[in-house]
Structure formats: C-alpha cells, structure tokens
Length: 199
Image (cartoon, rainbow, N blue to C red):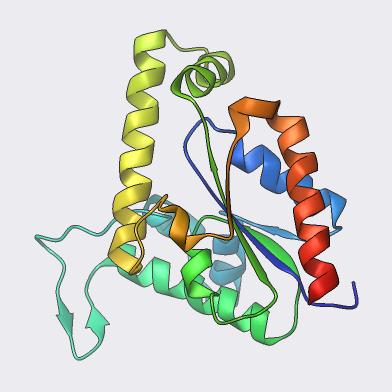
C-alpha cells in the first residue's frame, strides 16, 4: 500500500468488532494488532509474556496505584504505556495496520492516516452471539457482556480524555446488528477506501 493507513477498531463485547477488524485487515492486506502486541513487546524487552497478559487492556487499581514524577507502580499502567509506545513507533515508521482497542483512536489521533471506528450492537444481537460462541446461558452471557464492557470502559477512560463509546471520539460508529457482520464490514471497507482516496 503506497499511502499509510491506520484503522482503529473499538468495540462493545459481542458486537463482532474483533471479527470485523480481522476481516478489514485481510481485505486491506494489513497486520492486525490486538493482544499479539504483547508478544512483540515481550520479545523485544526479554519479558515473560505470561506476566504481561493479565494486565492487557486492564484498568489500574486506583486505590493502590501511585504516580511519582511520571513513573507509575501500576503494572496495568506500565503495560498500557508499552503498548501505546509500540503503536506510536509503528505509526512513526510509516507502517499501515489495523489495531483493535488499546485506546488507539486517541493514542494515534495526531496521525492524518488514522480512520477510527466504534462497533456497537443491540443487546439481543450481542447476547445471541455470546451464547453461541461461549456456549453459555442467557444470564451468563449478559453478565459476561456487562463485565467485559465495564472493564473496557474503565481502562479506556483512565487513559483518554474522550469517553469510551462516545461518538464524538470516532470517525464512524456503526451498529453491527442492523446489517450483520459481513455487510457491516462491506460498509466499513467502502468508507475506508473513500477516506483513503482523500489522503
């Protein structure tokens, strides 16, 4: 790809955001950065990835976390900042990629090649997908959805000025239940290609 393109996809749990991000990466022939960022960081810094994984996209504990002169004792904060630096470094190199979550719509907002997307969905749609994917009951699916989105919201809002899911913080917000995952991806691909033509 001649022009640099960065696609950030944030999502509600069960909305199909990960599936959409993966398919967009395939269609644009771009790498997808999600939790695999930790593998790159662990390899580069000779760290044990299993020690990093519990803190991936995790909100820090506000009662035990301390910041002194820009340094934090919070492992959640340290892992988040390592990922943010990784994404900025890739962007600075001129690399094109798709990134899932990780506050990318704000971390990379100064890059004109960024297209930021938020995928939401109706509760019934998310519930059915969660029940089918995780083989859970309706009650378990609803609890899982609420817990995951609460965690994402707290994580995001600790690191960003804009609020998680607020449409003003993204280029495009889309309800995947309206068209389904495939047609939603088609719509987003068309939007991104139109944006790419203007870059």
